[in-house]
Structures are given as structure tokens and as C-alpha cells.
Length: 111
Image (cartoon, rainbow, N blue to C red):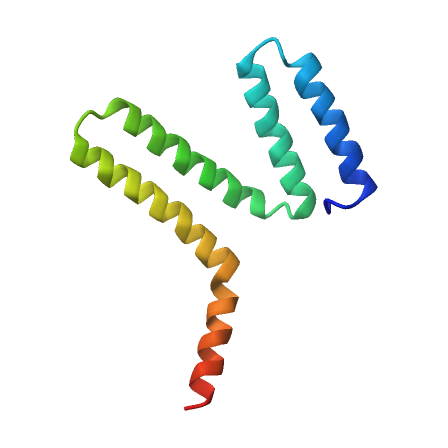
């Protein structure tokens, strides 16, 4: 679903109203609703990538839980950096992989 389509505008308006009017009684309901709607919106594009999205969410969630329960500064830095690196590695692999490969091929084709 592209952002400049009528389907997205209707999807956005309906979910905006539901988020602020129906689920405004509890932050838990609002957060759960946003999570479910985000998965639904993402699955409109490609259902296979929802697994990647779920993995990213779980990595971020569990790193946050571990950070909240750890008082040792060195362990906190290690966990924080490992979480950031793992999330950025997904971004680099799935978004920029073909860009880097194509540029390396172009660079080495001159040699």
C-alpha cells in the first residue's frame, strides 16, 4: 500500500480515529493496537517481511528488558551496542546490500 493512494488515506483515517477515540482509555491498548496495525500495514506490502519486522521488534524488546534489569555499566554498554549493531545489520543487509554489491562490481570492473 503506497502512501499516496486512497487506500492508505482511508486506512490512516480509520486507524487514527480508532487509536484516539476507542483505544484512548489505556496506553496498553493503544500500544497493542499500534503493534497489530503496523504488522497489518507492513503485510500489505509483502507478507514475508513481517518475519523480519517481528525479529527486529523482539531484538529491541529483549535488549531493552535486559538493559532495564542490569546495573553493571560495562554489561549495559555491551548489550546496548550489540542490540544497535544487530538492528543496523538488518538495515544494511536488506536495504543496502544490492547497492554495495553493484558499486563493488562497477569498481572492480575497471581493474
